[in-house]
Amino acid sequence: MTLKVIPSIEALTPYEAGKPLEQLARELGVTDAIKLASNENPYGPSPKVVDALRAAAPDVHRYPDSTGYRLRHRLAERLKVSPEEIVLGNGSNELLELLVRTFCTRESHVVFAEPSFVVYRMASMAQGVPFTAVPLRDQTHDLEALARAVTPATRLVFIANPNNPTGTFVTRARLTRFLEEIPADVIVALDEAYSEYADAEDYPDGLTLRDRRRHLVVLRTFSKIHGLAALRVGYAVAPTAVVQYMNRVRAPFNVSSLAQEAAIAALDDPEHEQRCRAANRAERERVTRALSELGVTVVPSQANFLFIDLGRPARPVYEALLRRGVIVRPFTGLENNLRVTLGTPDENERFLKALAEVSK
Ligand SMILES: *Cc1c(COP(=O)(O)O)cnc(C)c1O
Image (cartoon, rainbow, N blue to C red; front, side, top):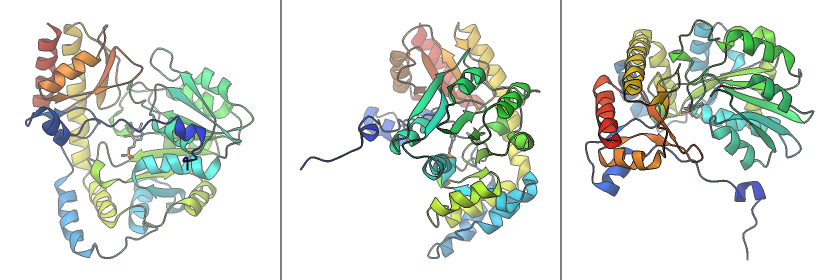
């Protein structure tokens, strides 16, 4: 019997994650490698998180609180929204998928930019939902073109701000205009996985734009600045009605008890977040300058990574960096580009030195 698969899943390719350190050790025998490939926080989680995980470990025989009561209330307090406007996810990744599963059918349509976070495409294809991928303009979301791509069937528009993989952002003025212009029944999902790293004066905090359109969903994650990538926890802030529909579809117990406790502990250590933000900003400026001196084109970044253009095929450079124990991120279809996560100052030095060597 042949396996019957819907065409959009037949066409899907699995998510290409940054290469794990253990895999590089297995494949090339490189054991002292550094990973600058997945936009993780190089400084790790707050020590308070580690304590909270230890304290919670003996209770893992119990199912977690499926409603995430304490974490939602803590977030609500901090973000000045209602707990009923928050839904927790197994990473914000799960929430991106949940949006598609909750609000789209094969008769619907989704809009997002390209290149942007590949999960928007994957989530649409997995459900067989048609989509339009709108090219970036000057490495930034082309909001006018995105608005033009909206059809009467469009249910969802995804916007990553700052964008991954380019690190660029859309300004408050342009985003506000977009939110007010596109049809009222379209859900705009503003993916702010890197918002805590953004410091441009006209970078908009999506939560301050919620009065500009009813169907706005702001997504954030504990995976990036909070350093909890392995635990899988993110959240969406959305109108209560949207949250209620997502809760109908959401799997019970989707966020583990360890993840919930760790996220609460992370919120209890704003100084750690502050230190990580400051260190990232300093390294972002320094590494951008150093790369420019090497003759590499760097897209101005508001995130914890740099999108670089080598002006020649990047795969061989990626491979040569791997052999020197530096894992960065290549992208299929973006032949001259690499995305490099900002690491600690030592890690960044090692990357710069390795890049200079392989560029000789
Ligand atoms: C990393 C990332 C996410 C989600 O990460 P999770 O670990 O699933 O919370 C979402 N959007 C973008 C743009 C990202 O880069």
